[in-house]
Image (cartoon, rainbow, N blue to C red; front, side, top):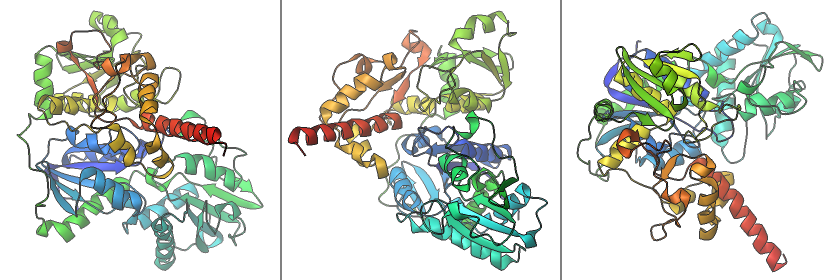
Length: 510
């Protein structure tokens, strides 16, 4: 059944993201691009736990009053059941927050249509392997911390077996619990073996760790986008013919699963939607983002971060500030030309030296390109990809609606290996601002947060910086605003906290 368009609603796809792996968020943006092309929603955006824009920034990017929030995760668990609801202030399937109606669906990976995608991916990677002579292994992380992840994979194994797909043997395997993927050959009674990673993205596990466990690689290499693709199927290993696919979440048709989850949500919940009485009362209606941006440009604003915004006869042109003279002269011969906003994400992902730009506020955006955009909507999307939520944060700040989160609050929400970051001393945090933030450290954001409600930042170049790295008058620039400590800063807090703890133990002689 075709998906019924929702021209007055927005879709927000939520992922985990990473401060270290540039490939982690790629599938989410690809799923958003695919759905955006179908013209089903007024707006389609992504947000992340460990990348920009954060969940607490994301709603500033959206004008629509009704928002479907879809967790693009492989299973139910701590992130989908605790972190995401907490970050958005969700109290049930539908919650009214700040004048917006937020619908929260089940994660993508638990939808029944995932089975079909696994079979499709397995067939694509091993088109000539006879099913009756092939073992299919679905592999994942496996951990005692989240049994739902393991259950999701085992459910898929059962669905495939019961579907009569034709494989001689279908089984699950994991990185950190039995049956271990490293023993894939022992669990395969056939010569042909197809391994499909049950992850959303080709991140550290599917593209780096598992290949070593399979014996395809001798050591963990760089991220997928930074080296030659090693998957030259098939691989002759351990007396068997091994086929290894990319993560199931990289499948283009995951976009359809996202839409399926929204359809299922509407079927189960939409008729009984009610407003949450505990929700925050709506503020005054904000100027729509495209109009806000257009009026700012008309008033003389033309710079954001390192990017120049130029009106043209066909719409708008973007370029790096170092290329302004060439663009205004019309000499584009030495510049790489792009048409449309989609390339903005790739341009903003890597610095000129190839390093991952883990925060988009870094002042190392590569130059040598020009981008033509046909509408104010395309311009807004491009700017959100270059500088996530920057325009919306400026609008919220101007309206007095920007909720700043102090560092202690941010650190108290950290989980897993980052939980220890909360123990950093105030002195350590103050020094870290000087060491990590501000133009001297390649960060062009204006810090709005404090250490805690009663502890402002010490005076320093970083704490005084106004978010305008170009030196232009404020009226000509959208400043880059930092409403909460970025994930890079949180990661550094963890390191300092550990160093402080180790120093204390050494002093105490323990």
